[in-house]
Image 1 (tube, rainbow, N blue to C red):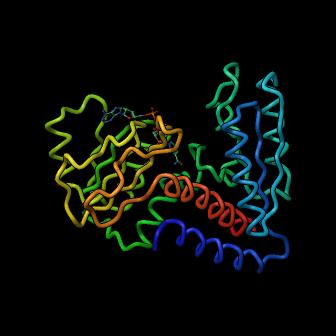
Image 2 (cartoon, rainbow, N blue to C red; image 1 turned 30 degrees about the horizontal axis):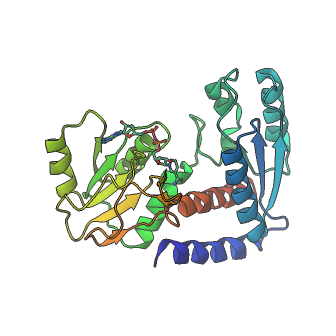
Length: 265
Ligand code: NAD
């Protein structure tokens, strides 16, 4: 199944499951920026929730909101029994401490998986692992290579692959080209998240059984979106950009929201 088909299939399951509750799951999104990219991400989340018959609310504040006011709003959403899942859209204005905000969200409502005590898996790695599992990637003892070590993608991805019993190698900007070649060519799974268009190309010799997951989003000179991997690599499975990890990330948020609802029943 390609990513789009998988997402449609899981959305059907999420919709059916929620129909068994007296009230559908409810998501609250807190936004304290006027960032157009955030607006677009939020529109996507509200649309997904709507499509599944879930409820959602957007609490939008001016970027001039103080940290104290924002924390009070988060507390309000934490204490609102009608809300199952609560996310605070990033980025935050520079005068607000991101860690303080992430830590203020009640762990049982933290469907983004950002709180240190959260029980939820973060959405991008979760979406990727759920899809790989569905596509039969065996995980246990397999050589997984993560390109990129950012806090937002590379590190949580590596952590989740370890949790799934892979042998995990994280490559980054200081990895030598010789080592990079060695690890890529021995990999059963490559997750690339560095933000450089078509960085992973056909100059490497891949295992033909390899899975390639492309997290990168790069705007090309043609004005279109391109991944970190060149399309059509000679591997078993490669996720496209667009229509790949972005969709899986959005799906994982809805999966977490349903889990949050179930946990609170
Ligand atoms: P980032 O800039 O924070 O991190 C890039 C990482 O790549 C760094 O750890 C750096 O060490 C590593 N890197 C840079 N050059 C490298 C090289 N030559 N070889 C190996 N590693 C190298 O970026 P990020 O926030 O992790 O995002 C990465 C990409 O994923 C971006 O294109 C971003 O737009 C995209 N992204 C997509 C989603 C999604 O849901 N689809 C979510 C988040 C990010």
